Structure formats: C-alpha cells, structure tokens
Image 1 (cartoon, helix red, strand yellow):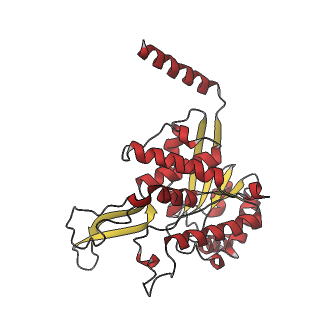
Image 2 (cartoon, helix red, strand yellow):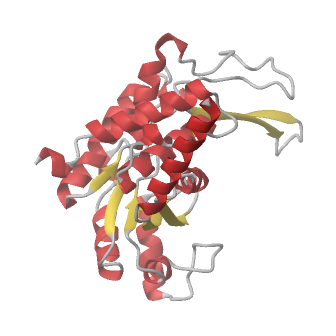
Image 3 (spheres, one colour):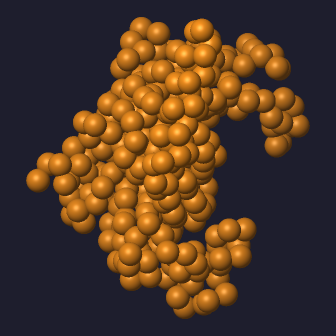
Length: 309
C-alpha cells in the first residue's frame, strides 16, 4: 500500500510538472574559468527540472579580465579576422550576435575582483557593447568568490601577499561588484555570498587544507579540504619531470560547482534551489543539502539594486 501511495504521489508530481510551461533561458557568459565552472553543473540542475531549459554558451578565456575582454573586442573591431573565442573561431561580436540571448553575464578576473579600480573603464565599455549588439539581453553580474584560506596570497604575514585574508577578499570583491551593479542597475548572481555562507555554516568543520603541510605526501596521496574552493592534483614538474603536487586554491571543487549551479538556477529561473532534485554523485547528501540551503539564503538575502531601491 505504501509503495502505491508513493508511486501515485510521484505520478501526480510528474503530471503537474508537465502542465507547467517550460521556461527556456539562453545565456552567454563573458568571463573566464569562474564562468566555465558553472556550465556542466547548471545543465544538470536545470535538466532535472522539466519546467526549465537552458542554453549556455561561453565567451570565456582562462584568467581573462574585463580589460582583456574589452581589448579583444576593440581588436576585433579593427581586424574582423581576430577571433580569440570558441577555439579561436569567433569574436565577441560574433557570439553576441549569434543568438537572441536572454542573459549576458560579466565578471572580473578573480585576482583583480577585490580591486575596484581594475573594473573601469573596461566594464562600462563592455556593457555598452553588449547593449548595442544584444539589446534584448539582460546584463547580469556574477559575483565571484574569495579563495580557499590556504592560499599564500591571503596570508597576512606574507610580504608578497595581497594584505587581505579570505574575509577581506570577499568583502572587497562584493563592494566592487555592488558598485558596478548600482552604477548600471544590474542584477547580481550571488555566487560569492553562497560560498561564504557555506563556509560560515561549516564552522569548526571548515578545513582549508589537511594536512596543513602537504610536502610529505607521496603520489597518489592528496591533501583534503572541506571548503567549496580548493583542488589538489599531481602533475609533472616542467623543469625536472618529477611528480609535483599542484595546489589550486581559487577554483571551485565538486561541492562548489554544484553550489554555483544552484545559485544560478535560483537567481535566473526564480526557482527554489532547496527543491532541486539533482545531486552530483561525488558529494554526500549532507553536503548537497547544505549547498541547497546556502544557495537559497544567498539569493534571498543578497542586496540587489532593485530590492534596495
């Protein structure tokens, strides 16, 4: 009897979903690896919701800043054969004109995100270009995130560091993105807030890197982190050819990419991420539940310009 009730409930849910009109959103990202990281996970999250459909295309180049994107645009204006995107087959102009985009996202390179002076005048120029070539698209900012606290650049005692810690990086990049959002009255995808909420929720269980000194590890041993940013892998030293442990404190790992996708899903589709049915295979149910909770909280509480005014 219990199985019949569950089956009936699932059938009813499926029928209701089938009656709901499908919302399709076409997204072009103008960014870098911090935009690339959402591509697969967003398709998976959206794919689990029969009422949603997404097309997402990237004008993304590794480490690309707003300045470099604008320089690429200006070069392509002078030389139409200059096509640095999509495997050097398209220009930004090509990508902006190739479809009727609903959303075009922009963001700063993470290493510059906390410095508001690095945004201008390039952000203004790019926004003007998008409005010219994709006038029906809504321009949306992705708030990027602060690095894993294990990064030496965030150590206050490091003379070659940035003189800010993880929280300081988050606060400064948030202020910079909000300045841009207020200037142009743009919506923000609060990925960085969701990341910070996850860290806060973890409390004492948040570990930047373990062991703190991983120099004694031997391949294939890897350090661990409970953060949503941080990846570690073995590769070859280019000079010596010996095995070398690679530390990546900037990019999101599997938990982080899932969290990022949930934030995009919630903000752009207006959906409740806590009701999302997709869960990646390589994270625990507890981690997934926390990701859904933090995504919902970030989207609900972020001080959007249209909410603040």
